[in-house]
Length: 297
Image (tube, rainbow, N blue to C red):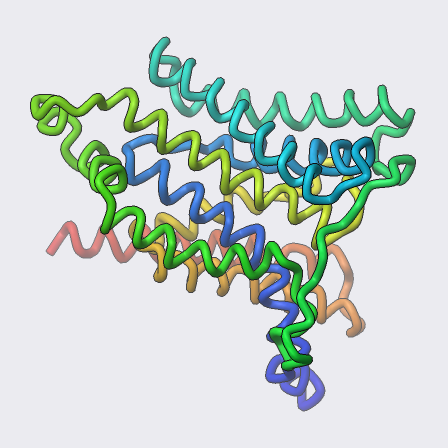
């Protein structure tokens, strides 16, 4: 027990929490922006997965990690734009469209990987690049974090400022809360929601690129592993507030980091790997029960 507590309260563990939470924070910002516009995008998982592969492929062929990152974000934005066309223009069922994006990404990434490398699981045949880490004066916890980790946490106040201090952000919130009223004021609901979904694609792309070019140095099959869905849960529990949603994302990230640390104990790996998902389901159940209690009061 003492050894376990030493792990939890160590600086190394706090640093690991930041690393593990990075893709969840990016995905949480993606979910938050689309949800505030009144569009529930459950395809974030697929957007991140596509970006993670495209980033690796792009960096391998251009020999530049930054160009790989650019390609990753662009691929996610394009897929998010496709999602917006079907959902906003053709009025496709939003849940089915999100599921289609996730299934498409899961199968397409394996197919592209096989075409390029002959491997269906890992991109080890590609000489991909990784994004740099920032020394930050050798300060514990902060030093050695990937540049995308810094971008993830800097994005939180930026998203907050965007939503509450800019005209476009105000329109996004207004469309999500009072779509009919904002339409009568001459604001295009379609264009506003499309903008929100494109921004969702940007943040999803950054999160996906981090997974294969920061957290790991390669692409692996279905490597997002539910982080997109965990981010949707974090946004729901954070009630669309950037800071609160980020704190909840950090909580989920901490459970993931904890599961990694518990691997050093004599605990079955199958049981350890369940911890982040059990915590997510439990937290959502508590959130739903609390909401129901408030509605009955």
